[in-house]
Amino acid sequence: MQSAELEINKIRKDFPILTRKINGKPFVYLDNAATTQKPLSVINKISEYYSFYNSNIHRAVYDIAEEATDAYELTRSKVGKFINARSTDEIIFTRNATEAINLVAYSWGRKNIKNGDIIILSEQEHHSNIVPWQILAKEKNAVIIKINETGNLNLNELEFYLNNNNNNNNVKLISLCHMSNALGNIIPLDQIIDMAHEYGIPILVDGAQSVPHIKTDVTDLDCDFLVFSAHKMLGPTGVGILYTKKNILEEMDPFISGGDMIKEVHKENTLFNDLPYRFEAGTPNIADVIGFSAALDYLNEIGMENIRRHEIDLTKYALKRMSELKQIKLYGDTNIHNRGGIISFNLGDIHPHDLATILNNYGIAIRSGHHCAQVLMEKLDISATSRASFYIYNTKEEINIFINALGEAIKLFQL
Image (tube, rainbow, N blue to C red; front, side, top):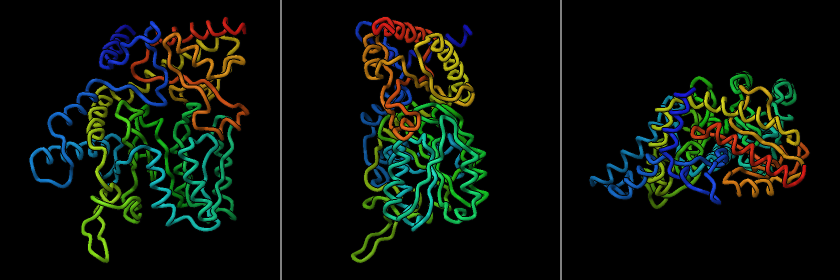
């Protein structure tokens, strides 16, 4: 235990923002499901690019342009290894996970979803994994089916839709989050993918919450699409990843057109570029993609298994301490191994926004609201929750500070 704590203390020194004081109190950052803080290695990597080899990529032949191109493509290679993709051609850089889902909805969906077809989602999806499919369904006169749940995915209901003779030929896509951003629940993805592929149905995995916290192997999972964002895993904002099986990607049309996604442009026609570049039009977010390379190095050095163990330990401790407060209502799976480092809760009749404001007075940052999961909130018959979420630099001492502040809120509202 002592060595583990010393290791966390060492990690915390890499994050300058954690030395801040908020309202005179030590800064306790518990909003990691929204975005994570950045280590010095990431900050320095971005600064290094702008300071010494700022240039556009894939075009010029002078030295710094080749250095920038090599650094950018090195990140693509690291991403591929991080998720064990078969080829770097399967790795597409986008602005975020949201854009990656929209790319699939536009380039794959508009080609493969037709009148009367069915897209299956769950009720715990982030808006980013609902709205693009709603727009597509309206355009194509398709149907969206949301699997009912009260915290855990209903596999029996999913199997019913896949096994039903009337629906079997019409289900064309399943799109699910691996880990809920609102509840932290982790779905049995391997079972679901096997089930989907038994009927020849592709599956998109929203890994925005899972990839930063759980070792992800797309070859082993055999998912067809995977999306995630750099900023939720120590990287910069403005960088998303779309993994797509190469045979599927080869049949998809470009999402955005213009420079760099082409080989030749003539008066009457255009020849598109090879994979993965045909899906990356225009000047990309070069600096932040290069910065993401340092984030991947950092996570690899710590080890994803170690990150997962640390978060299970923190979450177990936090749930135990929070359950001591009789005024609290906790949401999510009760099995600690079926959830990530996310805890949604309500404290008496205190509105989550009010609670977040009070906690900020104690230097604590949590999220409040519907967490871009209003469908789930409606299912739970609540308007909002408070949410605490953990990452590699959080400690049990911070959880104690958090619990004490909740106790002060209880006193303030005389609960």
